[in-house]
Length: 287
Ligand SMILES: [Cu+2]
Image (cartoon, rainbow, N blue to C red; front, side, top):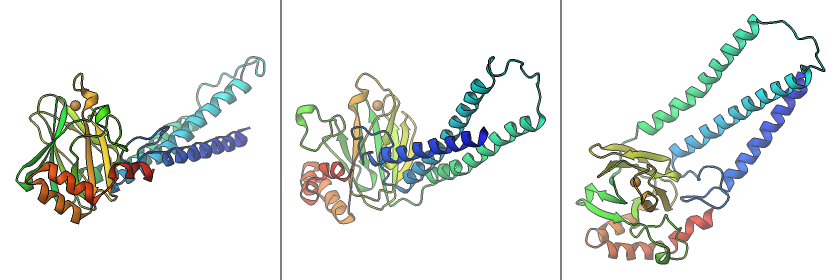
């Protein structure tokens, strides 16, 4: 009776795992995609680790849920009034009670080890190659380059009739922050008025932007492209209109962009557009 139930449980768990991996194949890079039901693709080591942890927990959850479901079905089929007219008076079973106490503890220990490893990866950044400061306000983000003479850019969401082909609605901004590929970028995050939250899903970063406080996160992007995020803290009526965008480029293009941006952001935009033609559509094509 139990062996077939266990086999069926494992088979369903395998199907769920296959479906999940198909779902992640549909995920977007740097932005959501139609019918996506997994996480966005990872372009940083930390988010890759988070992906693995997420899949690991999902598999454990699937097995537990299906195991409990199988037990319930067995109870319903075998121990209903018709099939089992005289109920058992058993109230204690020492071995069973010890097992259902110890097993969950062991499962939690197995989950805790990769969970702490991920936390350490997120909160112990390697030495930074570049620092940017991100300030949230009602309702836009400012990105500051403190090491480039406090170069500051304001990012405002593009409304529908300002969008160029390939730019995603409600995510594209007028100015795009630029960082070099494969470099550790420290992000200092703060808020100017109320609490906002800075997020770029494909980088695996999310940190609150709190007025009067400087929070910190970091990422090391390993793929060129434009990556979008949105404020993730309800911050007022235009909360949905404060996306953030970061473009990852080669060190060479970054240097050119930065040199131009120090004098004119519009000029820098032209330099970037020439160096990375069709960058907005790159991520769309890649997914
Ligand atoms: Cu906000």
